[in-house]
Image (cartoon, rainbow, N blue to C red):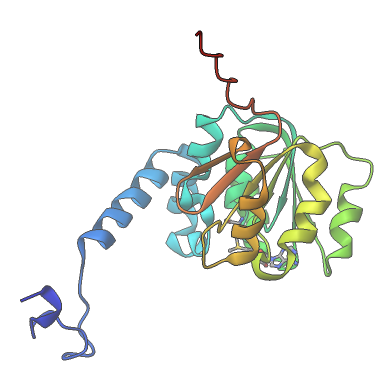
Length: 215
Ligand SMILES: C[S@@+](CC[C@H](N)C(=O)[O-])C[C@H]1O[C@@H](n2cnc3c(N)ncnc32)[C@H](O)[C@@H]1O
């Protein structure tokens, strides 16, 4: 008999029961580690509570992929700010972060101010054309695409690809615009990590050519 056949744990048999799985337990543990492991995120949690973390990809391994791949530089451009938590992480790796969003959440300003972060510039936009305006005359060396994955992946990538290093969020088969685009890039230039993150780095060296066989 499987767990789901058991009338005590079957959510269909007892519709309102809250049940717990090992996978959920693991995910909660990983999220606690992420917040406890970064003093800035911990401070945000202590001041603002768990609500501001909703919908944030800080839980999807952002800090880790940046660290593991020695991603850093002068200027990062982020599409999709929400409450500014990923911008907080990016601000630790870049001299300057420019982040744009069509949602104009007040919480992002409160969070950045609380942390004393001054190298993040939030740009409130009302339509996609304004993304290009936010980038006008600015040289970026990294972009994080975390906006409208279903509709804007291609145009967002076209806007930033010249920088050569782009991190994609929601790179999984059921988000086909992201999945198809990333799969079309030279495979050796892409690193997959965390929960649906994919880092494209145009400067990543390809595999060594095979030695010719003697005889
Ligand atoms: C799930 S949130 C993630 C925000 C942040 N990167 C994080 O992980 O904490 C996705 C954000 O993309 C924004 N967004 C959606 N469409 C957008 C667009 N066309 N241009 C800019 N941002 C957009 C949403 O308003 C939302 O704030």
